[in-house]
Image (cartoon, rainbow, N blue to C red):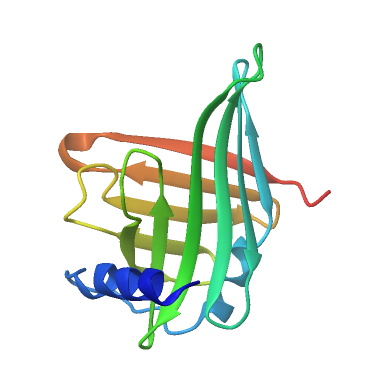
Length: 156
């Protein structure tokens, strides 16, 4: 990552405020997320993949593909970054010029919750580990706007 991007990410992360339920101080606690997760419906396949990129971060990619046409409906670059003894989730989508930063507010071996109250939608991302091979991602915002995706682990 170049110096300019590091500064921009640092500014984004520093701008996040809010109440913390429990701070995530180490990426080791979130190691269970590092897999390829797949969700398939009748019309779409969604994939979210995470890999550890050294001590301070995980890199990820999220995609949704229309099954009938093979058309890419959605794509985002993801990163979970440990910085200043806290953990942040960064999402870069083509609609936003800069990554959107979410601060870790709760974590365990079963759950990771990130918030960005300043963002329009989503404002909250919840990863809930339902078993070693099933992950539920709950995406929510203001006025009850929400959806969830249930993924199965596919490390092939």
